Every structure is written in structure tokens, then in C-alpha cells.
Image (cartoon, rainbow, N blue to C red; front, top):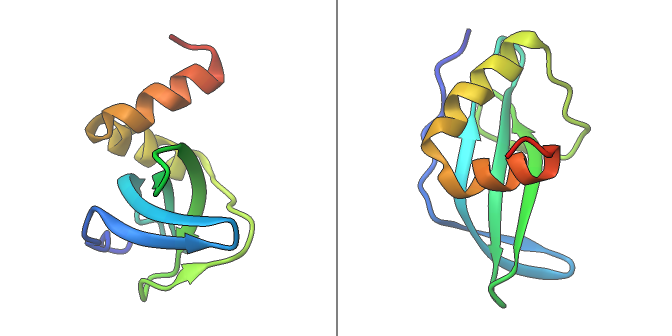
Length: 96
């Protein structure tokens, strides 16, 4: 397993429909990639959740995110440090 990359928070993001800040992030360094769940806060204050991944060189990848059991367990552990993101995911899953 690769060592987890250290990325500063908050950090900016920009999409075609708006920009803002990545304010929380849960990551897990797996053998093939580093999946990430990010809490995005747009400049207008709205929130969104992004499921994505980085390669082991730290480059953002624009492909579908595929998670196996180890990545799911690692992300679950990483979510312990992201209270707002965790609450949104619990709301999404109906597990409040």
C-alpha cells in the first residue's frame, strides 16, 4: 500500500459551473490509487460531495471511482476526521 498524500485544506477547486474550496477530505492510499471523498463549499456557500481519486503521484484523475473492500474500510476510517462530510453521507444513506 502506498503512503497517503498530504494535501492542504482548505484548497481551491474550479468546475465549469462554479468554484470554491475543498473544506474536508477523507482519503485512503490503496495499492492502485488514492480514493477521496471531498466536501466542496462553493463561493455562494452551497455544499456538494465529490467522489474522486488521485494517482500515487498526487495527480487528480477524471475517471470513474472504483472501490474495493479495503478502500471502503480505509475511507470509513478516514471519515472519522470529517464531521460535516460524514453527516452528509449519513443523510444520503439514511443512516442517521
